[in-house]
Length: 300
Length: 283
Picture 1 (cartoon, each protein chain N blue to C red):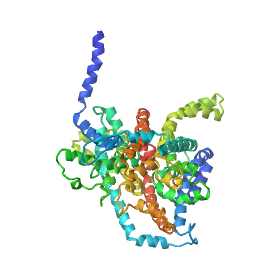
Picture 2 (picture 1 turned 60 degrees about the vertical axis):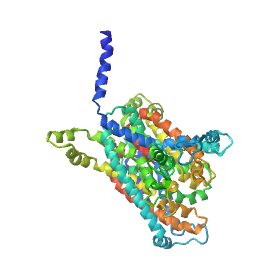
Picture 3 (picture 1 turned 30 degrees about the vertical axis):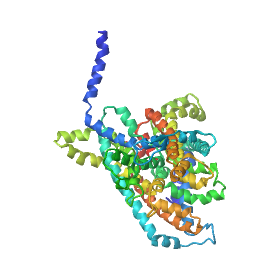
Picture 4 (picture 1 turned 180 degrees about the horizontal axis):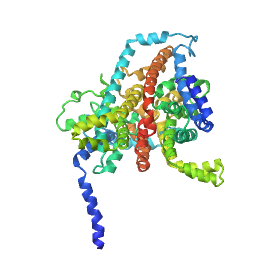
């Protein structure tokens, strides 16, 4: 979002409703400062401006360097794969969970409370706990050994620090399923049951009611939830930092380590990559924007 | 008659409950069990002295990790104080800045509203890592790098949308009529705001403040980049002990780190409606 666009909107608002602008101004200022300032300065530094070492310059060289770097391409593949797979698995599980949680269950209160448990737990703790669970000497491997199903821990599948990033996907699914499920539940309660009832009276089977009534109605929410989760997992750093391999790294880890390298000349290239990540996220924000009203107004 | 009156509702409740089918509960329970599972090794490790492969349980137990975590002389104390101070300051700033915006979004109509809502929600999507890496140089020039104030400002951006969205949700539904009554009875706009609007917004403020606290409490990357290791918080310690392979202390710290979030969830689940708990997913 460009500064000019924001100013144009701000001016329109002034003409319309001075109080609204006054109320919005502090928050808009903070967010615009960080987003435009943060991404803007990342961009400036990726062009070679504000160099910490040597002369400042303006060049696209660092983008070329980054894009030619085979390590970067490997990192991009790893990150895309982790995000796509996590989002799809979490979405499918969440659809199932939302359909189950739609009705009151036995032990409803406690189940719903525990279902939400991952929501406030930081990713870092999820990553540490899940590592101690699924690593080759983790609790699950020990249980299988005690049950006589596993002789050597090296026979247990490598899930942490593996090529595929399976452990990272597990952490994201663990964390995101309650999030997507509650988005879907909110949408389901807004939709109500009348359409399904109508389909039922017309003789639709359970599968037909799901496929031809619920899926089309839920599609906007599924899409916006998937976009949020995809964008988040694509840009998130902690989980692959704790659980990933040294090669190939996930894209945000690659960018952070370049940024933090003692060799300050690495910094512009790392920031070039981070600008590319931000660009992708912005595209997603714009797509999400057309759907965001549903979030703010709770589907009303 | 007296017994019947007591028994009937009990029976009808039991009937209602037995009509709830078993299978969905069983499936959800299975998922919930999987969700809780990662906590189990954390609890065991935090009390383990020696837990070698392939032992199912540690062969020797120890209170070392928990003694270390609660000792006043270790860096954990600094981390706890750092985390709580930063999170409280972030919460107060986010409430002060975000509440007016929440009121505007919740109950005012203005042109360009969708674009502004989008901008206000953008921190949910734009990766904090990128923003923090870009803005670090500004913070260095403003002498905010390596300081607690700097870290608080860095946490403000991800925390703000939660306050706005929570306040907006409550502001949409309550209060306009009561405010008009107060005004027609001669209250000034300031009096109306303090005595009518703020108390009516209290649930939104509580939830938004809670989320702002938790968002700040969970931040890792931005603390690392802006704090430069000078500002110590719990997540930095969790990471440091995880990397150094000291599983007992890493596990005890992770549990300590999670405690306020879980307590908050339990408290909030009474007042939260679905949409607001959804917001918590982005911590």
